[in-house]
Image 1: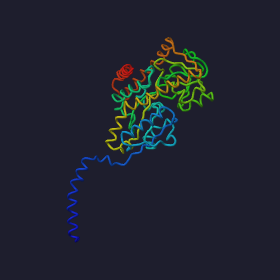
Image 2: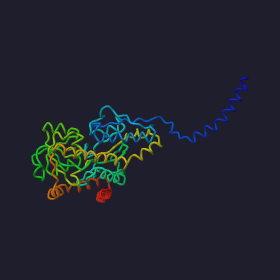
Image 3: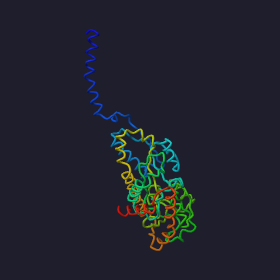
Image 4: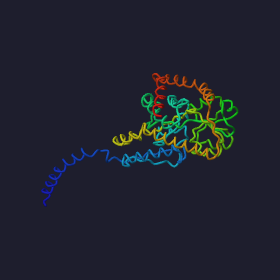
Length: 350
């Protein structure tokens, strides 16, 4: 074919194909051809811990709903000690992790709403109620600046564990040292007159085994997850929980922005209440395993009686007013109403 005729034929073919290409670009979203996004995940707890497992389960769900366009790659070791986790994620050392607000005292005062004493007996219920309060009232105040908050949640009701003696009154705690995480549990411990050692829960076994502390203020989950049945002999169960601990499950903001919009929408449906429920439910299951393990290993349980509960209520009552004052200082309108809403949600979800 002469060169001139060949060029004419090629141009004619191109003119026919161009409308088809335009049509296909309108039908097939550009996101469908986006590069896969890998989220580097970090956990400062063992892989067997319910929080590590919940993070992994959430990642599996994300991979499923995005047809594996977004997937997780666990790091071989924690990117940071627990108190530095939020900063590590914000700074891009990891893309996804969780941590305890109270590990950085004074930084997240609004989160202590979920840590107030007697907030319920279920981590799942408290977590969903807390997430609703976060969405309605707390998120707009931007305490987690620089992070994409996937969900907030709590662990199960905090109880009193020790290796020395049964505790059926505040007088029984005298002379005992208790490990605490920080945040409201630290304030609760001070309010009841306990001697406290502030250390992450991951150090509980070593501290108890060495005699550096006599007990821990923890949820029942810690018995099975952290193997504390080896060192704990006594448990005091406080109806409604002596305290809870507030967590956030967070993503690096730049990593979030790398995810295509259609996949972001799918991930949002797995975030908020869904993720809070996932973490809370796993913790309730772990609490039940911890209680069963204590029964099997002979840990003696004392249920706090009415007089002891009233004694505790009187001691911790000022903590509510302290949170209200801190919330007002952070420009939260009507924090008294927020507490009432939170407790009403917990009651409604039971």
